[in-house]
Image 1 (cartoon, one colour):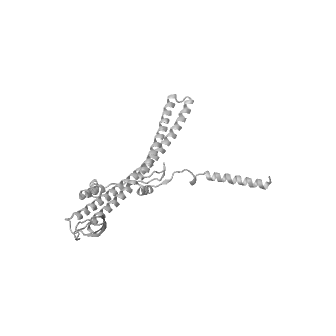
Image 2 (cartoon, helix red, strand yellow):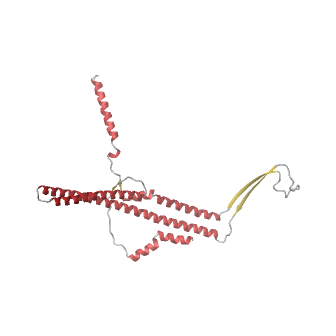
Image 3 (cartoon, helix red, strand yellow):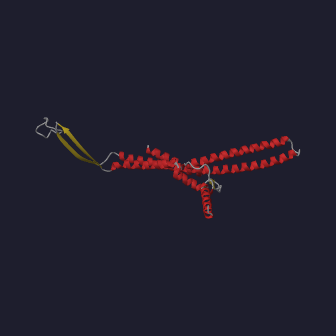
Length: 277
C-alpha cells in the first residue's frame, strides 16, 4: 500500500472516531437538571394545571348558558314541510267529492312560522338573572381555585428549598462524624480510647448516614409534590434558586377578618349561589 493511501486511511479512521465520540455525548454538555424559578413554576401552573383548565371551561359554559337564556327575548322563526302520499286526500273539506277514494296522489304542505315573546310574567327575566348569578359564582370559584394553585406551588417550592438545605446539613453531619470516628479510631489503636467509645461514635455515624438517606428521600418526595402542584409530569429534580423571604408585621386580626369576609372568593360564591336559588 502506498504511503498516501495509508495517510488517507488513518485520517478516515480518526474522523470516524471523533464523530462517534461527538454523537455519544449527551446534548447540553451533561445531565444537569433544568433550572426553575418560582415565577416559572407559577407560570407553568397557570398554563398547564388541569384544575385551572377545567375552571376556564366551566366559565365558558356558564357564559353560553346566559346567552341561551337570553335567546327567549329574540324572535323565533321555524319552518315545516309535510308531504303525504296515498289514496285518500289529506284535506277533503274544500273539495266537492268529499272523502271519496281517489287515485294515488301526493300533497305537499310548506309553512313558515314566526313568534315573538311579549310578556311571560318575568320568567325569562329571572331565568337570565339566574344564569348570570351562576356565571358569577363559577368565576369566583375559579379565582379561589387559581389562588389555591398558586399557594400550593409556592408552598411546594419552599418545601423543596428546605429539603435541599436539610440534605446539605445531613451531609455535613456525616462528614463531621466520620472525622470524629477516624480520630477516635486512631486514639483507640493507641489505647487512649476504649472500644466502647469507638462503638458509640460508629453508632452516631450510622445514624447520620441514615438521616442522609431519609433527607434525600424527603427531597425526592418534595420534587414530586412540586410537579403535582404545577399540574405536570416533570423531571424528577430541578435546580431551584434561593428566594429571599421578608417577614413583615401583619395587620390587626379584626381588619384581616373584615377583609376576608368581604373579599374571599368562596364567600362571594356562596352569596351568588343564594342569589341564584
